[in-house]
Length: 129
Image 1 (cartoon, rainbow, N blue to C red):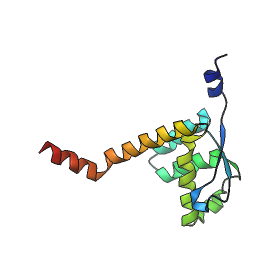
Image 2 (cartoon, helix red, strand yellow):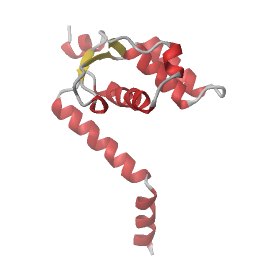
Image 3 (tube, one colour):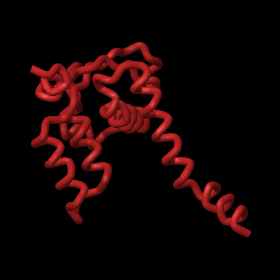
Image 4 (spheres, rainbow, N blue to C red):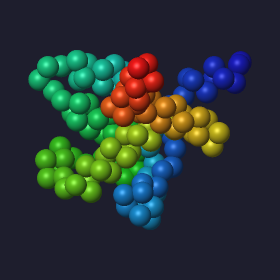
């Protein structure tokens, strides 16, 4: 069986040391299942939900060790807790990637952010003039 196909059949896990916690704590996170990904997309489409609801759902599913916050704990999150959630969320697409793949992904994200920034738009407009 093709190794690449086989690797796609299993949910991969990865270790992660969040910078927000001073990289002292190691978390284990996993990729989302197909059903979880579908639910994530449905939350994003739901007019009664926010993007934050979708992010919380994704991270709640992805956390293996330690387990994610309970719904009650989520309501009481401080800034550090919220920043931790968004840092874990940012790590999800990197699970199972080697160093070179991670660098390529980060570079693509930086390029997208630069293209979307107001400064990039104004520079392009100035060049056209």
